[in-house]
Length: 301
Image 1 (cartoon, helix red, strand yellow):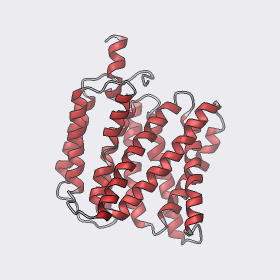
Image 2 (cartoon, helix red, strand yellow):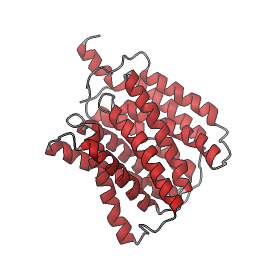
Image 3 (tube, helix red, strand yellow):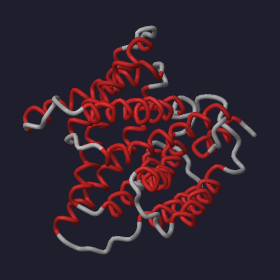
């Protein structure tokens, strides 16, 4: 395969073995976050602050070993701000519309990412677009179809779509920033900025910041370990070599993982479409990455 052809296909290339393992760990970590958030009674914006501050503090000792230029630091800080806006939009959507509708619309993230890659000049083959639509249909099958129409639910649906677009921008920024800085440096700055963005909202909004029960703090620690360190960190590490389009595609699996864990932890009734939905997500992902060689070098624009 020529260098030019390899570059064209890089945005749909199957990740190498190490990055595939990172992405598998990442989807488990992200999938755990939903049930953990459901178990917590801490105000959402307070939860955003503590989980990101905790993640930043844990990673900081490793980040201090590496240097980064001002431009890379600015990209990382921008990533943190966008991540905070994504979280706020997502949780706003969960409050205003149904969980089913919000989950399905936020799952538009991979499609937004592919669009942004295309706008930047990257090539996304028609087979990949088809695969993303197949996977998205699997998400809808699992989460259900919400046909309720009201100003409140419409506002929530719009917030969910904005959240999906912001998540795609966050992934694109992570890919860009890590071209010139290590993952630990990027994530520590990103999480710290996200926490500092959430803090004024906590204070101005009059939300409780501490004096929570021990159980609430254990849930925060679990979110730091799973959502931040095993979730976001693994995805960000993969972004150094894997296209944002492929990394975002893997996030489709957050829905079935969270659904399965909710059955176990929250005694929720499993969705009727969970098994065929997983099959559709797997099939769609296969359409995107099969017959494309793994990325062996940094190929992102």
